[in-house]
Amino acid sequence: MPNGLTKLFSRQRNVDSPTFQCPLNKGVVDVEVVSFFPGNRLQDRQPVTGATATLSGGTSQRDPGRSTASGHYRFDPVSPGTYTVTITLTPALIEEMDPTGIAMSLPQAIVGGVTTPYLFEFPGYWIEFQIKDSRNTPLQNVSWKLDHRPPAGAFAFKEAGVTGADGLVHRCRVKQGRYRLSVRSLSNPVWSQTKAIVGEPVRMTVDVTGLDTDVTGQIEVLDANDLNTVLFQSSATAPDATHLSAEWKPTRQQLDGLAHSQVVFRATYARATVISAPLTVATKEPLQAKVTDGSAFSTRVDFRFTDGSLFTVHLLGGKGDLEIPWRQSVARVDFPAEDGLRVKMGAAVAGAERSVFVPFLADVT
Amino acid sequence: MLFENDHNNAVPAPLTPTVRASWSRARAWHGETVVIHVRCQFAPDGTQLALDVSTAAGVLVETVGNLTINGGTLDHNYVLDWKAIAIAAGSELFQVVARLPQYPVSSPASPTLAVDVAPPLFSA
Image 1: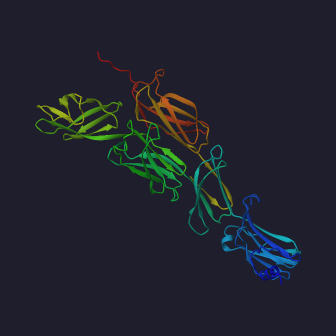
Image 2 (image 1 turned 135 degrees about the horizontal axis):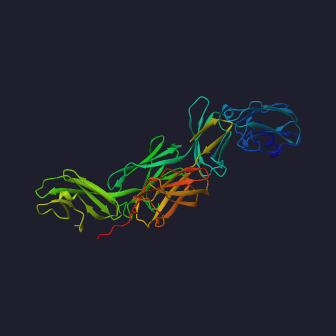
Image 3 (image 1 turned 180 degrees about the vertical axis):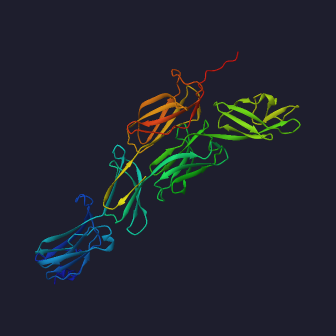
């Protein structure tokens, strides 16, 4: 017996989607299972994998088979006759498609040498959000995340993305249940201090919507003038569900390239970004006021800097701190005339006078 | 901004644009150029924008119009040249508000910029 014939007969029994051709006197049952979007039958057509196809009627006895990744299953070959194909969906498939009102069995006549299609179409469950502005214009590049809640369950993260030109978030063949779209945005960037002092921590915080664990926020401290020079960057932490935060402790090294005293922070979360108001970076220097006999006294001294800013030091018990904006120097010192003060620079106080000792000044008298 | 519904629904998700404006510095001298940083969310590219510069008391100094915002970002170089503008006496702090006239939506007033615009005093 020729080898080809042996193979043909040996593979005739219950082989999923056999690839060999049937003899001319046999027919082929080609089962196809697909899902579709009910709003447009041609849109979102997807093959259904794992549906069980059962063949009955006719004279050929075949075991049931499961639709493959292409959504097809073939009973090949079968003898001519009338055959009914019955489809059974798994519970997981029934969560994604609605078989209500769909005929699950289809009888057809099979003739020799012909492949007869058996098509089963199921409407997929779907959800669609359209992100647009208040003038009805679709919004592009908006970050979103989608959560799903099954009929008896809690919301859980499903997926995240960014809108295209149509502003649509459209998904077909989704699981039954409720869907919640969160738009990702940032707002209200706030510094924890009115000034950033070198060596002291300052916290940066922003309000966030659409927060989840799939994305890590970033916070950068930038030169406020060019917004390009990054002085510091950090992953943001989420102290709660509506805030992102990071801490910065400025160092002289970080500020090396900064030609002035103004910085901002930029927070980024997915495609959302926000810029803070500028903040002055300063160094802190100790001041001391004393009488030459060593006794301390309290007073107030005003310092005007080269950028025009003013800082008043309240010397309590003879001690206080002066905050000098980064890259600025003292242009003028004012103190209450009634105190009879004079400013001493870079040297110990000499003489029986009340003085303010400013250790870092060299040439102001 | 949450939008929610059951499966088999088309859900409109309208967003109102938000806009923020801030100066690049807290203090500047008259005649200098400062940058006004504008950041906008949920407005398409090409949205018209106007900047209202005013005193901290809210008296308008100047409106910069004919601007557009793209990618939610505009960094506008602004020259502090107010020689031809009558500014209320005693004004030293100035703020900026960004407006999107097509919606209409405005930013909150920015943190202030200190500019010394008082006439100089000369010693005798």
